[in-house]
Amino acid sequence: MKPAPLIVGAGPAGIRAAATLVRAGLRPVVVDEAPAPGGQIYRQPLVPDGRSPEARYGSEAGKAQRLHAEFAGLLNRIDYRPETLVWNLGQGAADLMHAEKTTRLAYDGLLLAAGATDRILPFPGWTTSGVFTLGGAQIALKAQGVSIGERVVFAGSGPLLYLVAWQYLTAGVRVAGVLECAPFSAKFNLVQGFFHEPRTVLLGLRYAAALRMAGVPMRFGASDLAVAGETRVTGIGWQEGRRKYHLACDAIGFALGLKPETQLADLAGCAFAFSPRDCAHLPTRDGAGRSSVAGTYIAGDGAGIMGADAAERAGERAALALIEDRALPFDAARAILLEKQLATMSRFRDAMAKAFPFPEDWSIADETLICRCEEIAAGEARAAIRQFGSTEINRLKAVSRLGMGRCQGRVCGAGIAEILAEESGQSLAAVGRLRGQAPVKPVPLTLLDTLPEAAE
Amino acid sequence: MSLFKRLIRMDQPPIGFFLDGKAVEGRAGDTVLTAILTNADAVRASDVSKNPRAGFCQMGACQDCWVTLENGERLRACTTLLTAGLRVVTGRAA
Picture (cartoon, rainbow over the protein chains, first blue to last red):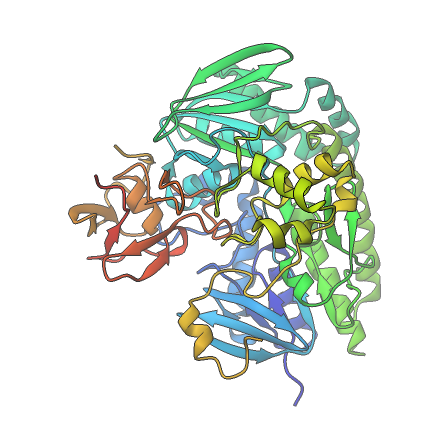
């Protein structure tokens, strides 16, 4: 008997993919690191905490409930593996770790829906206790019902900046300021975005208006962020042009948009290409979500940042491609409709990328830590680049240990690329990408020792 | 000092655990990260400079919040559910 298809991730893309495969009579394995389905955006609390879906998910409560219910309805027709990490894969098999034990699972058809993490560039003091990613600040509130501090500044760029600040304000937390690194003029691109997705743009404007009404200082064109505080955050400094500013705060949420999780696509052998919109190397796909490797499909933010609504459609579309490639009957009209919707959403995403642009001239001082795992400063990175004449990011990793720490470059990758590009006079596209390596996340060494043949 | 502030789940049953030998309390439904940071302002000392760290991404991606237990075992605080009697060493106690 043929092995089942494997779906990695139970967020909006993974859930819709699973539902689509089940409808075609397949019984996929769905592996997810979280204890409950929903991904990061529709993440569920560990225990019921008395909050309504509206209180937790705001404007997206209906979508969250629908997806959670849809997944619950699939449970006896799929092989669901929560709290399970895919730490290695390739050649039709994946190594899964659950409860400190590893097993090898053969699959026929691989659908990656691994999602995204916050995109980070370093600044002085960013490793200080009390600085979290915007996504992290949101998870604390949404899933754990805690705030990251009592007087919080949100900084960086991206739609999440205003959403999270508004969620904290609504939860009764004092928001000390919102520091947007993009200039105010970039926001005129929202007009173009409005034509494609008026609801999303209006929601964003509503959040900004509520923050302003509450008297939250909202600044644009903030550069040269710097955290104050030795053992924990006591404030944040920044510049607007030449003028310097400072705000007292006890916690900071920071990110510059999102960054797709592409390590598993890399291990699967997928071809990559540089995406100017995402400023990242991404697995190449056709309109349906087929990667360059036959039988491997990629959907959702893990393939390129498009948001949760697009992830649902991309997950379904990629699943239809898997069904078609198995020569099973599939709904061709539905596939065309989904691709059309995704094309519109992609145009919206073009406008959003312009409204929240990735900073072009993020200066990183020599003393600033670039790698938080191994604590390597930017100056050490620059010295290594000069000493070894590095022009490619994996060569730099080999001589400097940059990107070799526990996070495998998830956090530091964008910063390393930035410094290497600047120092070697190349574009971000030219310096390449940190290659994914197994294990993609830490697994106990003792576990690898006992493995008969998996770790190679 | 604590870093995190609880907004809800105040009346969940308390779960006792130990932070650097001192008896403290979390709440049912807490991750180890939440439980530590509602009692302290760091979860560990960084590997090289020994500076305080409190995690970063809270979604199991950055690996910044791996803490050590008294028995030498390690766990990722943001993705581990708090259990009673856990004995965490932050390495921060002077």
